[in-house]
Amino acid sequence: MRHNSEADWWSEWKELSDAGSLGTRRPEEVVRACRKLDQPRHDRLRGKLLKHLTDLARAYLRPRVRQDLVDGGREVIEEVIEILSVAVLTPSAADGVGFETAFHAKLRQRLVDRIRASLKDRDVIEQEAVDPETGIATEPPDWNQLSPEDNAVIADAIAKLPHLQRKAFQLHRLGFRYTSSNPNESIAVMLGKTPKTVQDWVEKAERQILELLGSNK
Image (cartoon, rainbow, N blue to C red; front, side):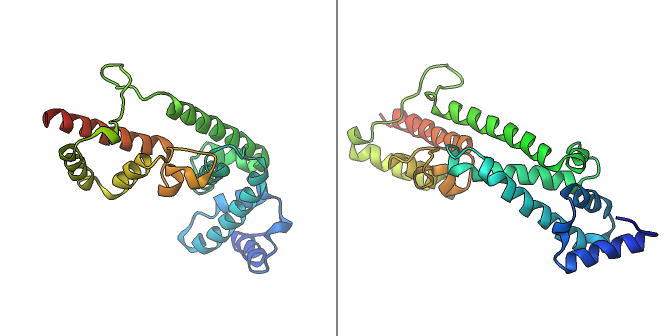
């Protein structure tokens, strides 16, 4: 793209955006232009260029993400989109030059990174819960063997939990899993949180309940 001044350069990209013709430019060019638009008066145009790039990225990533991940890989895709957005909008971001040089190759690289991280989190979650202080596997209460008094203690403890933590605990008690390839069975998907966060909430609630039940004897 040739231009004689910054005003000409800005006007040319604005015309492309207004005409819906950004697709005629290579994504690397769009990244470069977006990173160069660093003045407040450029915010609107920069937002349009960024939306074009994130739309391209989602279309590229969807057929390449593993479908056996939590929620079919949608969370992983959005993590990569966030990496792209930060790289484009932050002049000092290390990935910025990578996206300017090889847009799709950098997307693939970051997708692989996030898939590996997601699989690692899933492996951790599927392991038996262990008390971090004692190293002993913790067992949740057997809800079917509790007395009316114990159930009253538990109900009071659950009522005091923050809303999302209470929801996570109740869903887990009903048999839903922290994470699942089926979005309708995944507590993480239902609450919009990572599986590790959900697991931490549930295990913390169970420890508190076990302590309360012990002190109630």
